[in-house]
Length: 310
Image (cartoon, rainbow, N blue to C red; front, side, top):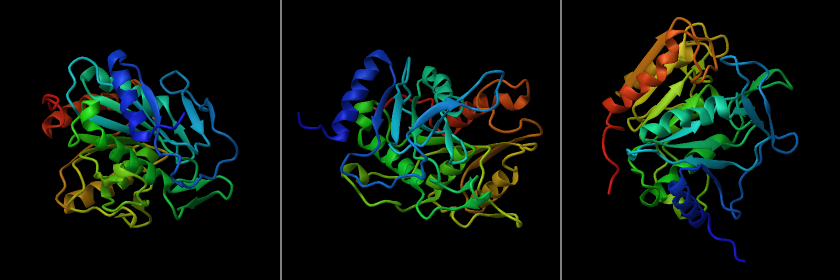
């Protein structure tokens, strides 16, 4: 049987999932696309993280060479808004539940379509290579290619999915927060077009950037030169704990300063305590209230609080 096009598969999958509100995973690229392979050491694997978060284990995926989207349809009264979730993991692994699917558990009951991006790893963005114990910046940011492609696919099928193509944003944690900043600030595609979806806009309409890394250019208090804020960068929400032992709070501080200098609407929440990689799991600290702060912000900038476009 002839293979259906990626777009047709995507549309059919979403129509089917909307009826039963079940998540559906679809490939990000067609078979004809010649995408690069990450520096994987074997086949894709699923395992558990080394530490507990909120008293529970978390799931990580490594060696991802076949990126995909998992779409969680909005429940109840759809708002038309969509959030593409970018899990963290240092561009080495992906924290797929802690910083991925658990976000959808929060968003979909609020009428927001949630899409989890499983992007290529490892070495698909600026990362700390354990083999050399050094920081590397790969020539090709495969994760950024995947994020741009995800936004374009969603916009191409917006009418079918029941979403507003002008209210598609990104939400990322840690390395995923860096990816959210990268896809927000790149005005050009970082890959050659592969089909008609690549005629769509690759810019998110809003961005939520949570405890990001790889933004602060040490030792000066300046932004990494690879992140180039422009007047087209979308409104951004930033969150960081001042005691974060992994990604210094200065990563958020320099990004906020650059956004303000460019006149981009930005809201930043800093907390004295919170650490790193807490996701949405309760910590007993005020920082755990961040989802409510995001909801208020999304309403303030007009992303939610309106009806699905006809």
